[in-house]
Image 1 (cartoon, rainbow, N blue to C red):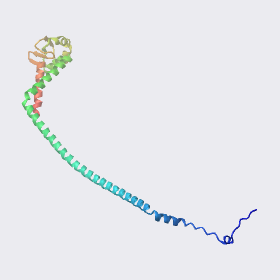
Image 2: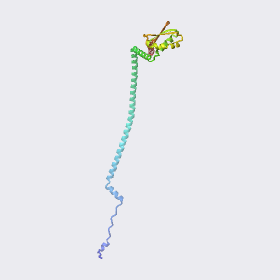
Image 3: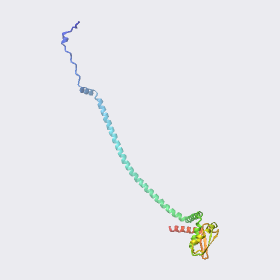
Image 4: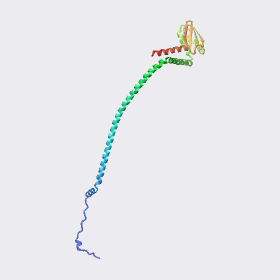
Length: 229
């Protein structure tokens, strides 16, 4: 077994103590002192961003309020302008209505005869169409004529040849309707228009022809027209 030689002074010499570690917070403060500029810059940048955001929001709020006020004012102005335009339109409509009334009156006065003739022509077409559609038109015409001369005992009825056969079959009905009637002579006459008749006796004549009826219709139209002027 071998022994290592040693010196007495080495045995007596104490081992130097190890340096103690500084506390954690002290190290952090030191690090903060060494790199203190970075946190300050970040904080300043964040504050600047917040200021800009607040400014942007305030600008948007001001713009919104200005828009709403402008819209309300614009709406009010628009309503006033619209009301003015509407009044002008209504005035124009009233003026046109007055012009039309005046034109209508002038037109009617100028073309009075033509208008009445046209109305009479239309009435004639209606009556003649009725004659074609309703064979009993001539029978009704005879009945009306006989009612005017209800005290006549002997009569002659002249009708269009196309109505003769139909009326000849109606003889019994004529006697039933007119109690005083003793004799009725139905005569075809081409001068009498279809649908009408002329009833005569020793006491006079009743014109129930289509022409006579049209004259009465035209007269009635003119009476109504002139009564409304």
